Image (cartoon, rainbow, N blue to C red; front, side, top):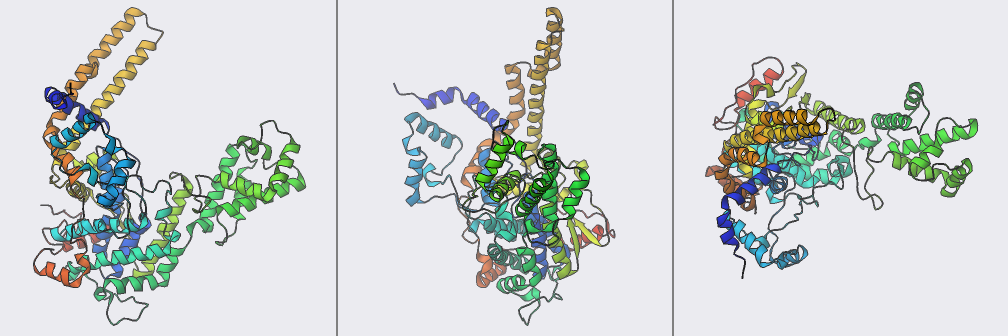
Length: 640
């Protein structure tokens, strides 16, 4: 007799939904933050391009912060899931790896075969149909691609821009600049997997200055559209920076002329093309790190004074990267040992520890191994292995995958130098010192504090009359969270986010209580100091103290109580996840056509920016800018 799935699901409707929700909320995992083109481009590069386009400092700052905040905020960063992996992938595709979800009929059959979707059993098909029906999902499974590919300047990269211009929302329009920039950095990689295999290489400007230049053209197109909708007082028409002769100030240049002039500026070219990995300051930090770690690992016999002497002797010019420098250093140390006897490099121990020789190898075996391998080649290979995961090596046909330690002082030094170079460029072009303050509430807990407007989550901003320290304040971060939430899930207005976060916080607390209860129960059970009666009494007291989580039934009852307020939203949430932003809006590139964009302006389709209906007004931004220099109070955010 045929299995009647629908009958079973009707009988167990509440149980099915309960199980689905428990699974959903148990998957609310949070990943560490990752970066795209990195802060040197997303904030400082965007600021420089906005200023170059003739947009005043106080507005350019907010544009640049919006571009960078895509990586700063938990709700929009490229690694956090937002409740489920499928929703996390959706935000990656829309905000960081712009690409289409529709596969097209030509590729559909191939995909179905590759993924085995054309071999589903009757029961599997019934399950899929029931899920689609229950959540009112109309899109056919066969029409969707499960492995998207990011494309440079994909129409989805401009979706937020046009949506922001239609709403008259500068924060939203500016956020799109991040996605446009990422479309170039991430081109050729899938939203589902990202560029983990290449780590930060797609994000380094000097790895492909040509691609970076193409990105600049895309960004200037967006900036000109934004500039068109700004009030006159937000435009700086006194700025005239053009290595290519021009009869108009920067504020009147079109996107192509701006991009061509910007790329032709020698200071810009120098910053973009400089290989930071050969910077002597970077190399010194990398070599110091390997020497210190080498001493701890018993590879080297060096004291602090000797390490300082070695670092001081390194070249002060950008001649060698860390690999070349370490290889040369190893040669000199080994040569010194040959001449004066062993003492610095524990070569036998290194080769044994790295699996090259057996631990009890003789001195003769070490010498013969080095001879057979070739001493210089051996030292090169050892240098490469010693720096592995600490110093990035250029991708090649022999090095196809990269892994980097993001928490090492070497990575920190790279970003410090890249940001410093961009800051020097900004001073050079605009005589402006600027420093971005990172988001202090970047993780899931901080995100909840933002959404709930916890005043202790307010940013602490230094005041300096020479340097503009800039960041989003708490109200701006709250507005950002609601904006991104409603963009990803258009059926919601953003206010529902507060309910979701409140209930999620209660469920997180419940999960913590469950873990505490299990750990304490196990500790009491295994403690040999207690006799039977004492152990039983202690367990009884523990059960009372943790009564809401002391049994599966109680956990389900408590969990259901916290889940129930979310039930009315679940079908809409799933439907938005699956069905919205599947194909880009057909007018996403209208801002590039003077004729089409002028018609949109005339007909009121796109709206002026920095009005009282926007997140900010220009007068508010001027006050905020003065406040950063210690001359004005904290501004009040205008919200609707």
